[in-house]
Image (cartoon, rainbow, N blue to C red; front, side):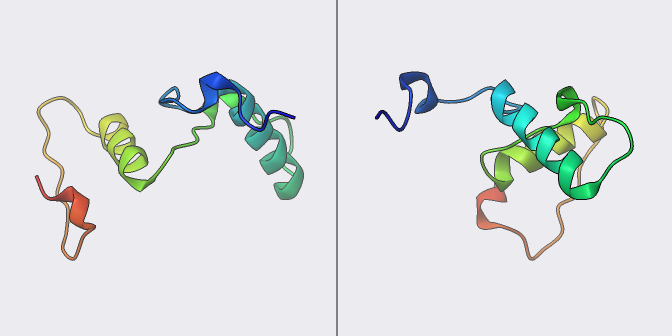
Length: 79
């Protein structure tokens, strides 16, 4: 049996694979006993902290605004 499909070993969509996002929405719905349904379009699954934090900054900051990164910080944030 094939463990990974060929398209699963390359870069994935920024918000995550649609099937994973649906599965995560269903999982969160089940374990949190949320009233109503959780829309998978509002779920983002990242491949690591750098990608998730970068996307979060892009979502929260307006063009031209600065973002402060306090120290100590993750070494990969050195620009």
